[in-house]
Structure formats: structure tokens, C-alpha cells
Image (cartoon, rainbow, N blue to C red; front, side):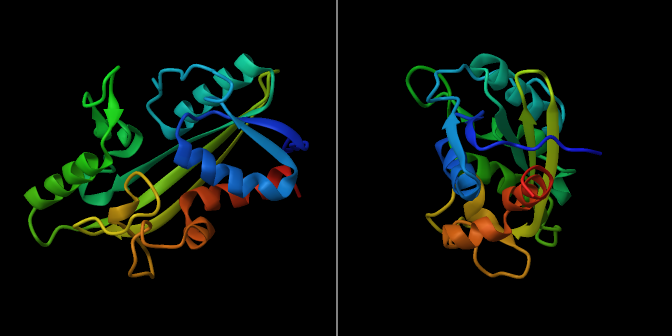
Length: 209
């Protein structure tokens, strides 16, 4: 399949998540791409009504491409826990939804990590704690063309949470072959092995090389 090359210039990152935007900016920096977030452009966040990571990523990418007239990159990612049948999966962020903040729902990741741990604890001490992070990247152009790439990183869950770096479920995720959680690793080290980095390697090979 012939991929459409991504030209240097402005690219919308279809996200309002500052941590995610920061990671994607760092990954795109070497390619002459000038990332601007959907939040900075004042673009609304579309409802993520898809039932798969790919559907949600494409929804967000097309919404930002249409709203800005620029190519847009969206990422839909999540944590899939073997013993929970792949949950929270596509509902990873929903597990963190809370009404704590004024002006509507916010996200409490410590609460979300606690929910996952609570469900694992109910299954008993010998429960399989393996899990993986998955990242689906969707790139959309204003003319409707789209490209999609998927990456993942295998690991296991630990408790209690450890580390102050990273975001989301990083403090409870220990990648395969390491003893530190994602939130204890230097960001550069995490970027090198993360699910997002895996998906980006595929994107770069297809769209820049």
C-alpha cells in the first residue's frame, strides 16, 4: 500500500491532553513538523463514540483536519489488562472520570489505578497481572485521506503506584524487562520503548522515509 508522505509544516495534534501533546511534540521535532494542539486552536473535542481505538483516533483526526484545514494527528491509547478481559481498554480514560472539579468532569488517575487494582484484588493473589499499553495513531488530511498505525508495549501491573514522571496509568505499569514503572523512568527512556514510540516508528517509516 502506498502511503501519503507528510510534508514539513504545521500539523494539528488532535488532543487537549497536555502530557500527550508534549510526548508527540518531542517525537515529531526531528522532522520539520510544527505541531499545534487542537486545544491551542480552540477546536472542540469530538465525542469518542467508537468501540475501538482505531475508530476513536480517526474520529478525532478527521474532526481536527476539517476544523483547521490542516493535516491532523490523533492518538487513541489505553491500558489492556489480561485478567480483566482487556479492560479498561477503549474506556481507559472513562475509568478516571470524576465530578470533583468545578465546571464539569475531570480525571482522577489515582482513582482509575485503584479501580484496576480493586478488580485484580477481587480475583485473588495469584491473578495474572500482565497488561499492555496500546496506541493507535490516525493521521487525516482535510481532503479525507487517512493513515493509521498501531503500537504496543507489554508489561505487568504493580501496586502501590510508584514514580512522579509520566501520566495516566504510568505509575502502576512496569514494562517487560524492567523493574521501574513508566513513571519512574526518565522521559527519554520511556519514549524509546513506549507504545506511542512503537506506533511512531511505524508512522515515520511510512510517511517520512
